[in-house]
Amino acid sequence: MSKGVITAMKPRTLRRHFRESFKNLRRNGWMTFAAVSAVTVTLLLTGVFLVIMLNLNKIATDIENDVEVRVHVNLEATQAEKEELRARIEALPEVESVKYSSKEQELQNIIDDMGSDFSLFEQSNPLYDVFIVKTLRPQDTPHTARKIEQFEQTETAVYGEEKVENLFSFMKTARNVGFVLIAGLLFTAMFLISNTIKITIFARRKEIEIMKLVGATNWFIRWPFLLEGLWIGLLGSMIPIGAVSIGYYYAEQAVSAKMSAHFIEFIGFIPLVVPVTALMLVIAVFIGTWGSFLSVRRFLNV
Amino acid sequence: MIEMQDVTKKYPNGVMALSNINVTIKQGEFVYIVGPSGAGKSTFIKLMYREEKPSGGKVMVGGINTAALKQRSVPVLRRKVGVVFQDFKLLPLLNVYENVAFALEVIEEEPSLIRKRVMEVLELVGLKHKARMLPTELSGGEQQRVAIARSIVNNPKVVIADEPTGNLDPDTSWDIMRLFETINERGTTIVMATHNKEIVNTIRRRVIAIENGRIARDEQRGDYGYEA
Image (cartoon, rainbow over all chains, first blue to last red; front, side, top):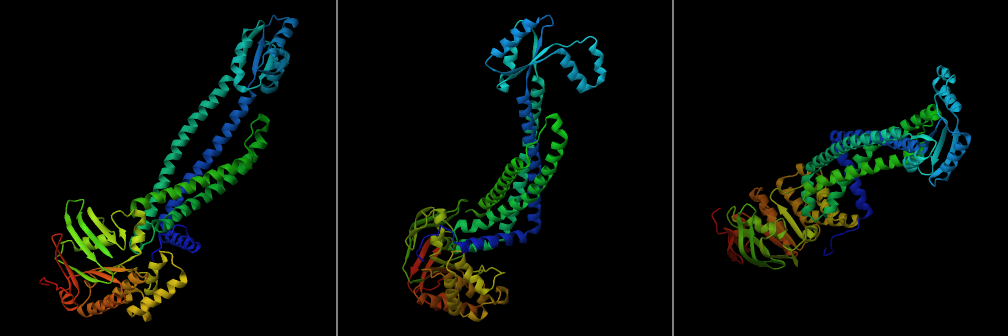
């Protein structure tokens, strides 16, 4: 018996740890149920939150990419002066494309969008002729607009600044609130897992004492409890993963059917569900094993 | 086998349990540890299987310096030492066979070896025919036999017993003592803390008396020396 402490785990031993961990789960059925439920609620909210944030992010990026500078041309500008303005805008290095839209076209757009009430303005069109400028990169939009504003024959150069910035500030707030909420829930779930494991350990303290006396290694004692926490985490992730996947499958279909006219598009089913599921699994495994690790460390003194 | 040099033990609450202990116990010896309650017997015993660490001095067990032993290496020591207690410490939901096998299972022995060794030691303690019974179906003496079987199942060099007959009637105590003698005859060192005057005075062995945390007496073939 002079051999040292065994470090590599034998398959037989691994099987034993699995058996023991399932036995523990069954033995404290109600605590297991409470801990699994806590993980379920936490992950469900985390998953829904993630899905919403990722989609808002995508929509914001899409809108940002759509941002254009609308250059209102001085009402007195002659045809030649308009041509010159166009040439100067096109010469700017940031500019990708320039499109001309006459004030008649502009009014027609409004009538199409808002209804025929606006056809009254056909008598005396109050709008400007407009150059619609797209920049190569969305973040160049503001200073390109400022440059164009300096040109002769430019009345004003505007872009959808507020629209984008409002969306971004809304997202920032939503993200912070969401993170606080989820952090609180993660903590609660971990606390419940930790307590469940504590009860298991308490129920088996005599067994653990004997294991220590006859020379079981600390890891040998620890493994079943870590696995128990892992199962709780994984069991708790099943319903949220299913619900988020199925829910998103229908939500994405409904949105793409209804909203495509408004150029709003959700992230596709697979590109969203795969990373969200993976993340939920990682969180489940983490809170499960970490929750039990904490109580094992405190309780076993190993 | 066991060597203590200038060992002191002071508990965190300030109690000086042992001071200036110097003892050498050779392989194959049978040693009684006697003394009044609270004199330091239990601490002495606990130092040997590293339930407690000495505050000063050196405790060597089977070539291992227990004071310097890292927490994660404690199992190495425990596998060389068998421990028996007054309250048996059996697992109530496991039967006799499983209780003994447990000691080998948790140190990851081969299943075929476990079966062979468990049956051997159950034969030795005379409980082979009760292998399938639960501890609650056994008498106190039989339960202690199971505990002894568990303590020797992995062939330790030394068995440490803390009041092994404390909960047993006199007749049963003699049976248990005969069992310890048999184990000792097979070459295993036995260190036993006891209050049983009759046993110490009849089965004459080395006696170490501890009083007020010091060794008051260390005699080969000594007697109990206290009024029971």
